[in-house]
Image (cartoon, rainbow, N blue to C red; front, top):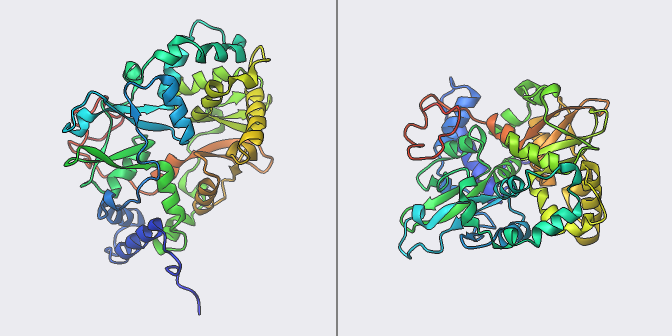
Amino acid sequence: MEESPRSGMSSPEAKLGLRVEDLWDIQEPQLTPSEKLNSCFESISVTSFPSAPSLQVEIKSDSSLAEAIQELSKHKLLSAPVCNVKAPEDASWIDRYIGNVEFAGIVQWLLEQSEGASVETMGGGFFENLISSNLYKNTKVKDISGSFRWAPFLALQKSDNFLTMLLLLSKYKMKSLPVVDLGEGKIDNVITQAAVVHMLAECVGLHWFENWGTKKLCQLCLPTMMPSQLIKVYEDEPVLGAFRLMRRRGIGGLPVVESSGKKPIGNISIRDVQFLLTVPEIYKNERSITAKEFLTAVRSYLEKHQGASPMLRGTISCRKDDTVKEVILKLDSEKIQRIYVVNEGGDLEGVITLRDIISKLVHEPRGYFGDFFDGVTPLPPNSRV
């Protein structure tokens, strides 16, 4: 007798998948699969999402940039809420938090301070000087709040549903979403893109997932970019140029390619700047740091001090004829934010991010958000409100 896909599905994420399955089975038959999923997710509250293990990590507004970087690095986080140390005990969440500090925001601020320096001469000595400077040690997180993306930040209320959450994490490019408890004036949970992809990985075998997940990437028009449009950095280019490019283009990572520009040799993400800021001594003998040298030095450091990291496994890739399910399982098992699409010869053809995956799961109905973004600064681009 064939074992039911429900057998052994005991994780909190799998139980969520089973709820979607039950809702899927009672949808009107004339609805398209996309409409069915929209309806299913609209029926589930965000309070059902499993609590984040790093929920209690908050950065105090009077923390220095150095302290914030260390805290984010220690917990392997891309961002964390910043609590206002001057807020009264009974403050609402809007007054309790001044925003969400991101690695990208700190990087942006630091790179702006170095605009006058040539990237070709920014070797390890530059970073050693930077992290020993009063600027880095004494500048408070609250002092760079102007670089935060939202004021104070875009948050979900406990009354919001999964569809709202999925749309914000995909179309509206949010990497994480706090769920606020209005009564308590505090953050009740933080939902990330990676957590959603992990939930999807736990739903393999369920009908609603297989209906969507067995489609090939090319059937869903993934990747969305042509190879000529892909933002990349060459192996012999300065790594600071890569971080500046990420800042300028508003992306979280990019591939490092051979000098020919065809084959990827690695990936650099905005979070990897932690190695420039926390262990710059590994570059102290370098006059300049190229993207390839950066990858080599970091991999060597990780082998000695950590032993397990996606950076040690080289370039993780897929093909256009791979299924969405295969890509989700690879993204989840490798704990990575993006995967590169290559052809049979190993040449780079595109990139697929967590956001791309989520964006193919649901669609935004016209006028869906209504007044949701009222008071949010800035208004998300391309919003249909």
